Amino acid sequence: MREYKGKISVIVPAFNEEQHITDNVKEIIKVLDEAADDYEIIIVDDGSRDETYEKALEACSHLFHVQVVKSDSNLGKGNALKYGFQFVDGDLVAFLDADLDLPPIQILTLFNFLVENEADIAIGSKRHPNSMLEYPSTRKLMSNAYFYMIKILFRLPIRDTQTGIKLFKHEVLQDVFPRMFVRKYAFDLELLAIANRLGYEIVEAPVLLNYQRGSRMRIKDITDFLIDTGRIFYRMYLKHDYDKRRDRKTVKKQVPANEEHSKITETEKTKVTN
Image 1 (cartoon, rainbow, N blue to C red):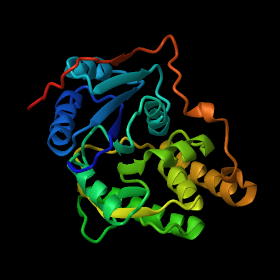
Image 2 (cartoon, helix red, strand yellow):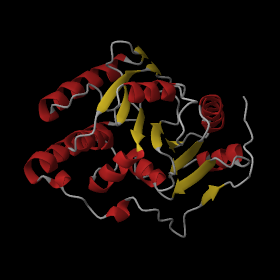
Image 3 (cartoon, one colour):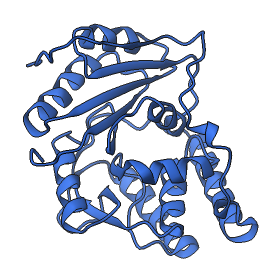
Image 4 (tube, rainbow, N blue to C red):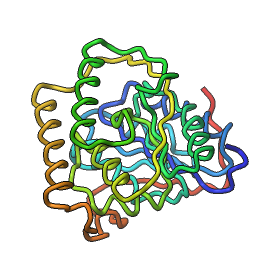
């Protein structure tokens, strides 16, 4: 990835990650320091009830290439990613979950797949034959059931929409985000379904997944997930909402006065090590 002349942006949504955010941010920085010439990281605290925001600020206070932004309330991972995109300046944009169940080194894998396949989007896929997975059987069962549901409803040319590491060309998100409605549960599905409908090329890459913590999903979350999925089907095939562009202000940079955010502006990058 060193030979890449553009800039890479990594958006990291975080919710109640105070125990891990400092070490995980350092790990992301370490990987990108070694792999990329020009990069930035946008950490988005999605209304955490703990000290995730304060810990992230402390870890990044001396780094010019890291921004830490915060939403006053928890509006969901999808909303956090869209909010973080307002601060992005890169040619390529990666999504990476803050818990690092998916190691950040895999951004390099996605980059290689994107370039080699001349694709617009590269996504990590648990269903890729070369993926190495360690996660609970209940999660596998839910993942398999959702896979078949999506296959029947949307006939996408991909086998996994939900794995939390993805890489996009900047212009793809510029085009797709203004068309989106979902903020939480089926955000990844809506994003990829719209991109596919618009003709963007999507390629799947293998992942190493080490699921370390229990599921945060409740029965209500699963129900809402399925409802959102049904709404996406309705909007795509019955209302054709996704063929229309919504107001671009949905992704225009707007920082509410009551939201704290920081952007460090030192002139030299300071490398962080563990």
